[in-house]
Image 1 (cartoon, rainbow, N blue to C red):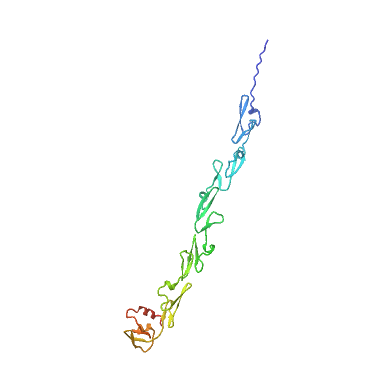
Image 2 (tube, rainbow, N blue to C red):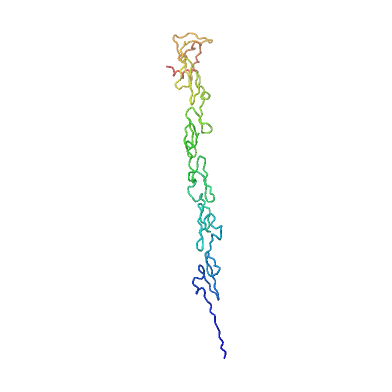
Length: 281
């Protein structure tokens, strides 16, 4: 009598029976085998029964450009350098400070650069110590030679004004005051005298028999000589009894005056004589 024996070999479920199998992954059992499917950021060990962390920082040297790569379990982190920020793809992207920082580069123009920015200041301004704004330059105190004496310097935002005292005029450079030669530019200055230009002013020197007018700009004849009631053919006659100034003579209907027989102006043309009368005492 022959007995047939049939043996059934049961499959071993490694996923159930082997503690710790496919750590950091998912175990799939198959007939006579199994498979580990690793999570993102992990890879199979050589024995293919477990998953270990992938060091993305070592595997990809170009990861985290403009920052420092720090490996983590199953992933990595980028610590960005100053001037950069983390982008949606977990990389470091440049920060446009000119758009994001309100009030940056006051009184100037902001230029974005990779990882930073620069301020280009307008004329009359300079960078602040922190390099983030532009401040006014006080030309009067910070720039030597600005509006030298006798000019008076007034600082303005981004500029300055140089003002000159009387007797001086501002040069086209807007920075220098020069003396005005009144003897050349003022008509009738120091009439009947000699004009001497001085720094910031003028001095009239009068001859003997003349005195300086109250405004100091003309010489008044105060000589006293004979006054004549008649002037004919360049000859003076009929002198008055007392001597007087030319002004007194001509303004009292005199015809000629003095040892040189100066003819008095005709009636209606003696405006200058009348104006001079106020200086005679």
